[in-house]
Image 1 (cartoon, rainbow, N blue to C red):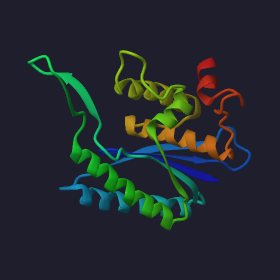
Image 2 (image 1 turned 180 degrees about the vertical axis):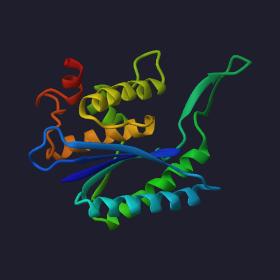
Image 3 (image 1 turned 180 degrees about the horizontal axis):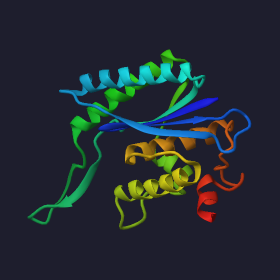
Image 4 (image 1 turned 90 degrees about the vertical axis):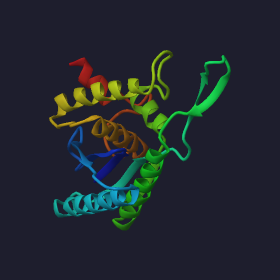
Length: 208
């Protein structure tokens, strides 16, 4: 069977796991798509075309996607507290509203295409798949969200070196995390990442 993990940002990272019942671990492919567009709708249209052709190609290669997961976009822009020049605490936006709109449009477009291909899409919060893959859902004290990017890139590079696939950028690395989370939920692929159910792929790679 094949399953697909997607991370949608300014680029769309993707990871495809394929397992034929005998391989251990599954065959892993990673990549990303870039989008140029005037607005969120145009970028979502381009994602739809990329994903449609990708899924058709998977079918041609005998790797139809039977399960898929997309990192769930935020629905509201987060806020943070700052101290202004008068010493007063203020809440300000900690993100770009336009980016939020774009990510939600892309999420909706990807979900529609996956449903059309019977790829049974589910969504997962970033904190959830990070907890499964990295062991923590929140960055350590004193670190910000960039810590997760660095850690996931290091873990992805370790797996890529061991199992012979490429991880071109941090979006692809995050999609690998999403795919590993999905594989853990299905219980169909021998990735061994559930707590108490054997060593993780990352642990195996680090041990060598």
